[in-house]
Length: 161
Ligand code: SF4
Image (cartoon, rainbow, N blue to C red; front, side):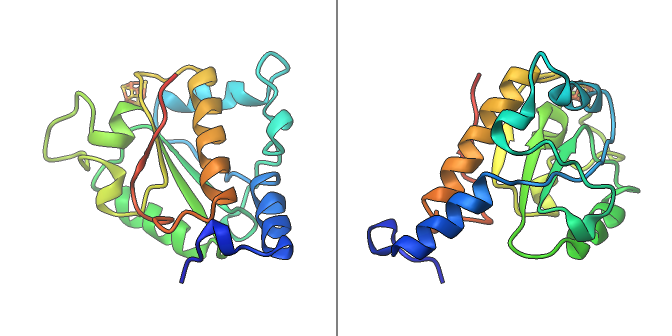
């Protein structure tokens, strides 16, 4: 059960600071948004400034699932399995219009938002979102982790660049 930030002791706060400052995203791409996600690690955007440059090639070492692109119905069970293999605590970012709502793909083959199958913590709008927008989403997620948001695991934070 989540605790109000007012009652967090220094140890809790330190633990949350460590968690938010060392997010390990999973190497995972679905569609065109993935190209923008890759740009996060280059020197121009330098996601290392946020402690999140250690992209992991296995879900068992990752605590952040960035969903970059449209989720096909065929791919949905695979994504759910990858999420299940990630250790707790873990977070999900819906990157782009397609991951957030299906985008322009309003048809039977595309899941109309990844929050239909996973608990999304932060949404990043755009088609595709710029790397700056994704970094803004990171900051929003870090704020959520630091505050021990009682809604963690539920869709509520919208990132706007
Ligand atoms: S939001 Fe745009 S760029 Fe991203 S996967 Fe959908 S169509 Fe491609």
